[in-house]
Length: 370
Ligand code: G6P
Image (cartoon, protein in one colour):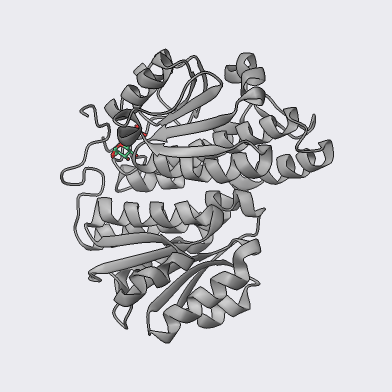
């Protein structure tokens, strides 16, 4: 056990720090900057079906469901393909309207989640093309899907998913880009810009880990006993707000909610007072102005603002009690960067609270019952 942790106190921390490599592994042999191309061998044979698909339905659970939500934004923006994201458990039990011409894409780290397997079987029975994004080679989902892409993140031991999430988002990004290219939505020039930027993500993740680990650890000390947390994001970073809140709940047992920032005024704003830490993910340029006014609303109610932002965003910095700077990237790739500080924040808070980080109470790495 100790050897496998490679000097880290927990698997989760090891896996967080592995991300520059796991993301690069996921891109290896697929993302080619020189040729300006993306090759996803596992779905090459079904590319025409994807081009002709009426829509893609994504079904997953937990963190994989969050990466699916990022996927929805990616496919709709980069490939102009309509996407719906379903909880696998709900999809399965409501007589879903899915059939020929639809693609069901299941996402699962383990490939063994019972609800996701059931959703896959249901959609297959109804005539949809069933594809998968999986981490575990040889798993039930990888065997039962008709085609798919492995995440190649390596074994994930910590119950709370970290490197599997970023690898799933990378796969979804590569799928959306290659579909966008095939459909003629993206020009060669646009592709080239996206591919170049995507190839820089591992070094940007490395930068975040190097420059923020200590400050996040210190900050975590101040919020160890907070009873509640609110996470706000917009657009691509709304799913990251959900994921940040889930990470905190899972391993520190602090009640946390993730919300689309503008939806806050329809409820959660009533909870904000000087005791409430509010994590704002303010690294999506095209919604920046709106985000700033959401942050002002939090500030006016004396919420304690922790922002994840780009350095030059002085408006957000001025409003924040704490800020975590991340490098700039294209809006649609930002979840791959913004999620990193949130993983670290939940980790250090859980450690401070003396929680069993790698094996949280009541949770399992793979939920094989429906
Ligand atoms: C469990 C795990 C989560 C995971 C979810 C889905 O709840 O604790 O970390 O996100 O299952 O698992 P999957 O293997 O299908 O991605």
